[in-house]
Image (tube, rainbow, N blue to C red; front, top):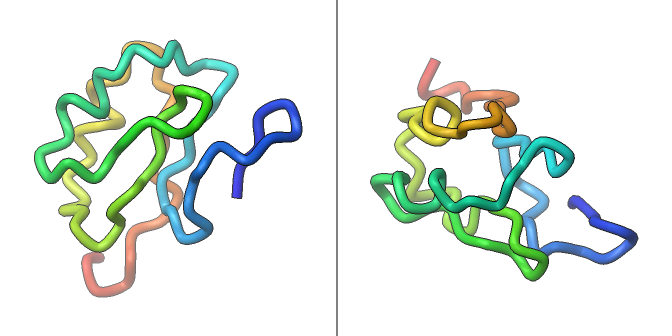
Length: 80
């Protein structure tokens, strides 16, 4: 779970994407480019994985982010 100024942003506990809120511009490129509509904006405008089970692990979000604010921490063992 992630917090901004002590307030929960709506992120799920089971996300394998890490969003660096210090680098994130909240531009929405990652949300717009996600082919499976997995990413959405949280309560404070930062992206988070809303539908983790629909993710294709395509890594598009990490490549299109202009500030490299997204990192994939882990890939589920069935995909490796």
